[in-house]
Amino acid sequence: MSRLFVLFLTVMLSSAAWSETAFRQLRMDEESSRPLEVALWYPTLQHGALQTIGDNIAFSGTRALRDAEPTSGEHPLLLISHGYGGNWRNLNWLAQRMALQGYIVAAVDHPGTTTRNQHPQDAQQLWLRPQDLLHVMNKVIATPALAGRVDSRRIAAIGHSLGGWTVLELAGARFDAQRFITDCQQHPILSGCKLTAKLGIDQPLAASKLVADARESRIKAVVSLDLGLARGFRPDSLRQITVPVLIMAAQADSDALPASLESGYLATYIPADRQRYRRVEGATHFSFMQMCKPGAAALIEQEAPGEGIVCEDGGTLSRNAIHLHLLKEISSFLNQALDYQPPRAGNPLASSH
Image (tube, rainbow, N blue to C red; front, top):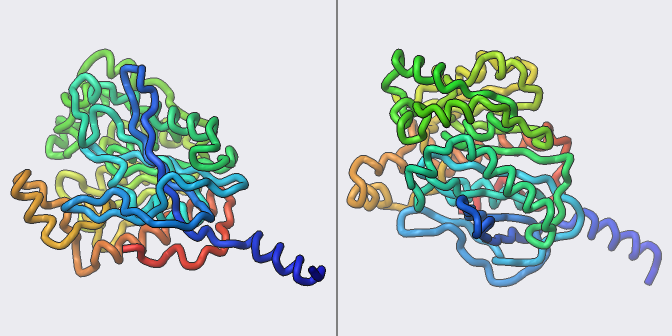
């Protein structure tokens, strides 16, 4: 074998694209009072029969290899937190595409505020949401066989709605329950205010737990997607955030989740040199979620009147077009914030729908 061919082969292997996304599910802390359902997406060089992940009668899933062998080397880690009543499937479109860029992506179902578990005793432990992400982070770091080796210098977190609140806690934002309750007297229409009792914010135990500093120094960047409950964050804590924050708000917002009072609140107090604020054209609060299948809104309305709104987008842009814009903004921000150069992997911005 010639030296020239060996050099050519080495270059080709070092720049190889992640040819597929792999997917794995696990249940953590089964013996504890707060077991966690976790979904992992990660890069693999294996080939095989792709399966559709997170698909159901209303929502589209994504394609991945189940339980494939992770690639070698270290990879950035992206933690995902869903909104109230949501689940790990809500951002599957983003998770799959970030894995194509070389990220290990871990999403957790938060007990009490997820689709299949809305038990009041779990929901009223709001302060445990950030801890859920940290438990998953530690598990993935400690167990490379699950999804590959994590580059501990490159860890980020992203959350939608209540998930946005969750990842801001990890960035150092501190929640003041009494401040939130007082503000809700002025803005009772806000959707977050309507969750005060369900989330236990009006209970002394929650008030004492929520005031604690949940900052995690290993998380180097966070992304908030149209968050709620923002107005309970203490302004002084937002001013002291030191990691880069991408704040994305729905341009087609609503009275219940107005960008000016929620995402805009973050943009007011987080120092300008540490945040990037974007209004996403054509996006409603639900445009950040997975793709709806044709006729899904009607099906959802039959089962849960009023909930078909989750399939509505604003303006003339399709949800797929909104997702492509979001992916471009989010991946550019994270790659820059984490000082990460993705491999030359085909075209990760191409639609997977």
